[in-house]
Image (tube, rainbow, N blue to C red; front, side, top):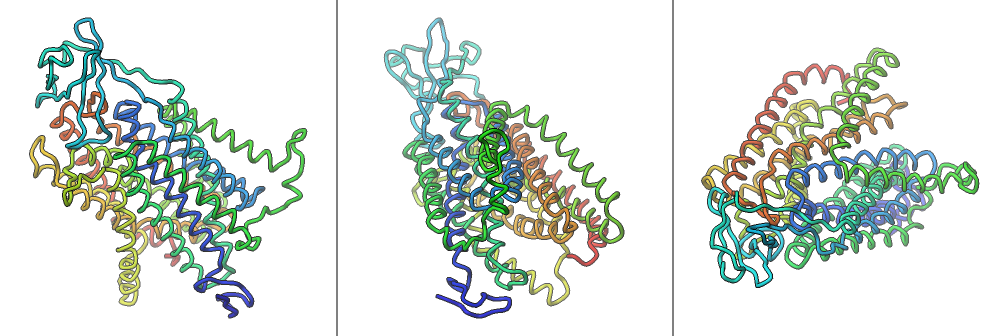
Length: 580
């Protein structure tokens, strides 16, 4: 339909759909499919690393942490190149192409790694007869004469062979009597690393810039802006919700390549939608200067080509750090410290009076997000493995694949975001709406509370029993409620508090520390690592105790940080000078 009203609504003659610029729905669908591809792959990744490539839990967690951290950090580069040279349309298109390539690359799984057991001068393969964990997935030992299901004694010290005569082995073998090694396929391992690097670079060029285009659709003071971003945000969660269910089920039940392949098809749909919908953007995402874009910088290489070559540089750097994730931590932490020193220095040397106070408040919020995301982002790593291995996931007669439970966050956002939004309005009318610093403290509190609730649930099933599935629902609900009090107000607070001349820099710091949070999440997840054989646990009781110990520790630490944040919230509110 066409809306011809003026003022802060649609401009005269503007073509709209449901009262919003038509381009919003092109961006809605593009972002929905991009998030479908991202979360579809993300839900499978940690299990894929531990079972298909047979990385240890610790190694898988730090690879996952480096990967998710790089996704955030590279948005700073992608956003800067788009703002100065490429424009958002070209940046999003380039990012989408890289994403399609990366997701389809993940579908080339090969035969994976092999775990070889050496016993009494002979070699045998330890593997699984399925993917994930549960009643239908068994550890098996394969010899030249056949194969047999194997299990472990309660203390994990003895390998028990169900059909010893089939494989020519005794019925039990002590842990000290055999050794194992992992044989990896270098070609498919490098395909994995390259695919992750392509996805990192693709998200770097697409994620920040597509949100910028949404903002560009609305003029200054347009009252439809918040509503438009709400619709766009629903696209993000719709994609995440559907992907976790569909890609998660396909990957675990039918094969890794089907889950990853569907994620790639989703991103391809997103790319096609964006390309076909270009006219609906009405030129709002074009390069700031076509002349500058075509300017030669080195021989035949112009600025536009240089930007794309920079993308190849991002891929190379990302691949290096995914292959060497511990090295990324040694770079990211000093970078975070340097950024903090720079921000504080800027506040005290370039700002005065209220502006300085507000800049300091913005720096606080940039840093205060770290403990929340470090715990919240366990969802894709340690919490995903915990759900797969140590939760009774049978519901209505179906053993639900672990990645499917990652849809809970998006599902709870659908249900509770409108309720929370209404609650803030209702409290504001009564003069009781919590300040932004208080909301941040509550968000961190909920992150810790979620894990303490899960640990309480773990204790109800004994030392080696499976945890009831409703505790997984509970931890995701608690964390989602924390997210709704912290995430929506965080970016808004930073954009309002930072001086206009350094909003972009401060937002870059937000993404940098988001990346640091995700890497820290990987470090925390690494401490939950348990011993595995063929990608499965050998000692359930020890693994469960390890998860309980780590989750209890980080839970109480988060509660302590939240209490400190609550105590200093009046000081932060005062620094904001009414910009709450």
